[in-house]
Length: 166
Image 1: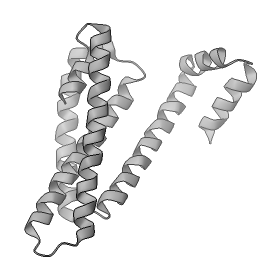
Image 2 (image 1 turned 135 degrees about the vertical axis):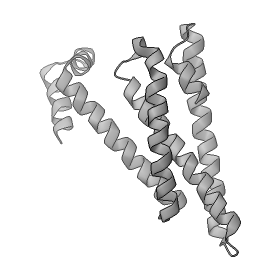
Image 3 (image 1 turned 90 degrees about the vertical axis):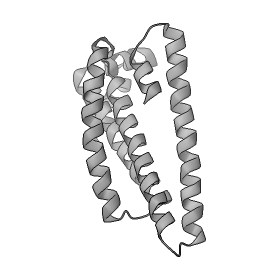
């Protein structure tokens, strides 16, 4: 609610689009609120994707997700120290997106292992996991395309190189 109030204030106090966006991108409070709103939207989207494609998670899947996420977070934080000059307001959403996509991959792998070992699995479960893997392929392709495009346009090694390999 506060985020919408900040956006409304920016656009109502400045008559045009450009001055309002400059205000939103330079004001520290509005930037924090916008990033917080993006984080909430990303987590909501992650829960929606998880619910649609996987349903409720089993205990083994949650345990593996927690274990892998902690390890991967430490690896990413260590690896991004190389790209200190690339820290910006768009960097944090990229890291969170990378972690969420990797978490979805881990869940898909664990669910495939479960389907392989369970004797009777419904056709709906098979359809859900195949469509989930197709969705992940599409997301990976889009993420890779944008990273490579940014790398080619900037012509220098940046954090997009790291995201391309991840």
